[in-house]
Length: 276
Image 1 (cartoon, one colour):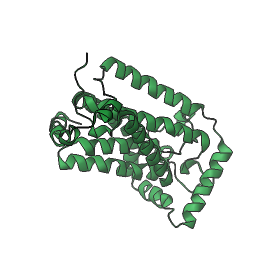
Image 2 (cartoon, helix red, strand yellow; image 1 turned 90 degrees about the horizontal axis):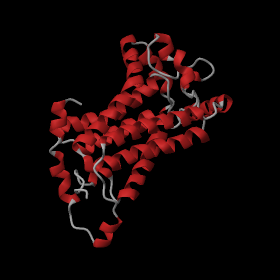
Image 3 (cartoon, helix red, strand yellow; image 1 turned 120 degrees about the vertical axis):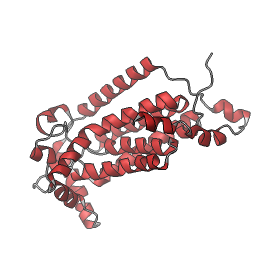
Image 4 (cartoon, one colour; image 1 turned 135 degrees about the horizontal axis):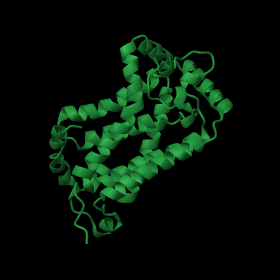
């Protein structure tokens, strides 16, 4: 986000801080954990180590190809039975417009990381009192997703038997997806459920929507996970039901933050109280 956008977001605290500072009972206050001012070196180290650990665990999940393909076939049949199997149409329609699908390939490969880190930096700079709780929601979301990868191996649509779907990264020879081409050995091919592209993008979108003041910025925040859903389906990296799994994980993440801090992240004070 540019500097002008960042500046425009600073006034939101006036809108949120009113109800946040409402008096609470002494017992309630004692149960709340007070957010501390984040330390840059610690946060950089924590994020780097956490993502490395997540990648190692995700890729250590056994690639159960047979079971993953069987699960993908079951989901595809069920969607047809319910008349909600739209993925193939979206995939083939988007693939017919070269500039569009190439852009989606790069979107899938990059924005997932860039915007998530950007929102973390924005929170660190302008909302330090809400940073730790919002980061906890993101980390808990990602952690519970690992359970899904272990319990429910799932092949992405592009790897299904029968050639129903188009692997757009391979066809258009674009850089990016570690699940296709020369980089596929670096990523677990059968960890499609839940979709963390959706989990992370919805985390970004809700954070921006909750804390931004300009209406168009808030709208863009909500449109980001919607666009991500279109991209993950169009590139045949996920069924849309994988997105449902990502949403469930995010709900869990926010529940953890709510229990730990006694309030949802955006409802906490913008600035933590002075430390000792």
